[in-house]
Length: 339
Image 1 (cartoon, helix red, strand yellow):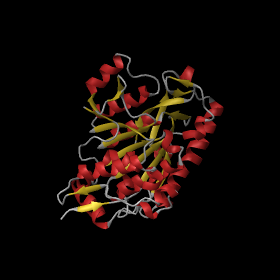
Image 2 (tube, rainbow, N blue to C red):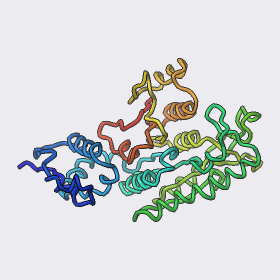
Image 3 (cartoon, helix red, strand yellow):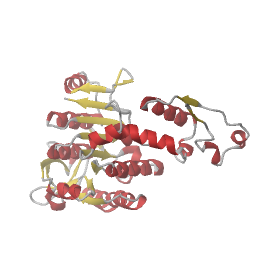
């Protein structure tokens, strides 16, 4: 017996709609056979999202049999990822929009409930961007006074906001906020361009003991990219770099960098998957530049040091993180780099 997915069965018309929609008589959108697969469901959902306002789709109540079938077909993917560590660099547009913030939090909690072990590394977001507008090759220039602001905003405000959202938004969410200074998680050293960049540092060493403890107790660590050197001097460190170093130290299954671009582009087209050799060639040819340089470098460094895959995804899309992980083909919405 075939089942029919219609606007009525999806409750799309049960929401408050403009008059031009409420007068329409619901008609079947898609007719799926009994043995439909995940690709068909995915295409159906994608077309619905494209056709309707995302805010409306977020409130759709899918029929029980469709939810059960999708979850059932997702089981192999969930089993494959269960217990695996995924390091997510959270930043860009996903930290600005209320809808995208909620989307990321929901994805993280869901992945944790599925048995994955996510770790979040974040930068300063719009709060610091409004204060630090001097850039040098994608790295912020940070003098002594600015470093105080970075520490206060990054650790005291942005970090706690993310932790609070995870802990309060959905049952099952349990996050713990950290900076690189806490428990000696990160040891910093000055950047080679310290004279130009000020207190912008690099990661000299990672001590993942506190992260392992938190993960084993079912928590989601949320790390602010501030660390101190051996003398106690604090440094602002590029969050992409921190995410890559943490992923390497833990032998993570995957590193995911959320950004404001679709991924790595070549001749205007998105490159879905490439190996380290191909990425290095693009960099040598000058096809990767500016703020993408540290992102690509940390992805390459991570996969060369044992991280299975590293991805650069478009954080401007709702649930881009979930789509990247729960992908039946191993490649999600952005660019995936393998060794």
